[in-house]
Image (cartoon, rainbow, N blue to C red; front, side, top):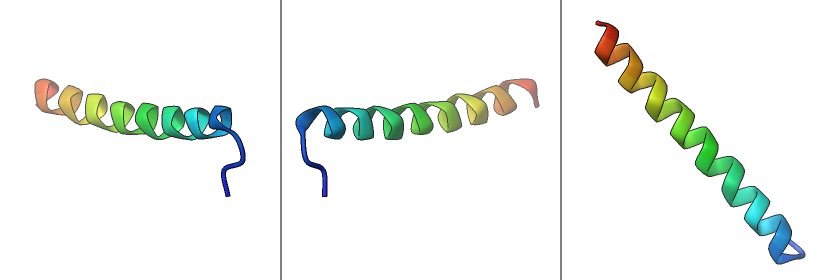
Length: 33
């Protein structure tokens, strides 16, 4: 599926950024509430 290591790095980076954004948004909501 993933041909090169660059594609794999990009894929992992997008997943990591998505997880970090959801994590930070939930923390932000907790701090506001």
